[in-house]
Structures are given as structure tokens and as C-alpha cells.
Image 1: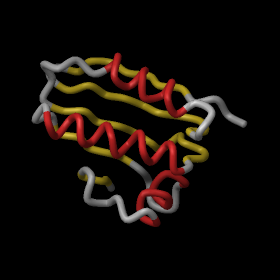
Image 2: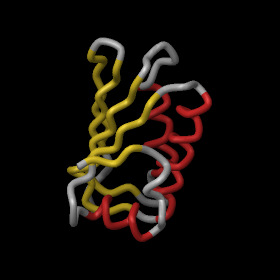
Image 3: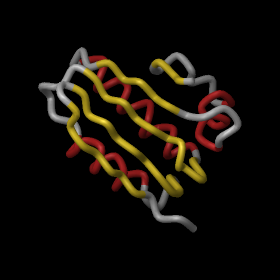
Length: 105
């Protein structure tokens, strides 16, 4: 199992976040807490890169959904980058969650 890692840095008025590893029931609450801590309320956008996510289950998808709801309420734009045929992109598409945020590419 690859432990989940959240790396974030502020780039102007946008937070660049890279999520890597496995996101599942065992660590979803920790990933959510790290995402919450990494995103200040004053930014206008969050770019979330899921390219290095090796596995994501329904708990991980719930983290993405809850994050999108929270950011929408704060009027912060969320862009999710998940390469075609990646585990994260596949899970998002299979769950019908493509409308939670802008998905690139």
C-alpha cells in the first residue's frame, strides 16, 4: 500500500495541491484534514493534481465530493487534474462525479 501524501503550496491566489498514493478508508479522514489545512479561505482557486494517486476508493471519492461542496460554498474554483486512464480519473468517471469540478485534461 502506498501511503497518501498531500503536498501544497500557494501560487498567487491559487493553491496548488498534489495528492499521491492510495486514498482509502484507512486514511481518507487524514487526507481531508490535510486538504483543509492546506487551503486558506482567501484564495480564489484550488488546482488539485491527482496524477500520482495510485488507488482511490469510495472514501477517497467522498473526500473529493466534500471538498468540492466546501469550496463551492466559499466561492473558490476547483480544478482537478487527473490524466485519462489514471486510477483517479477512472474512479471519478465511474462514480459519475465529473460534474463536481472542472476536470482536466
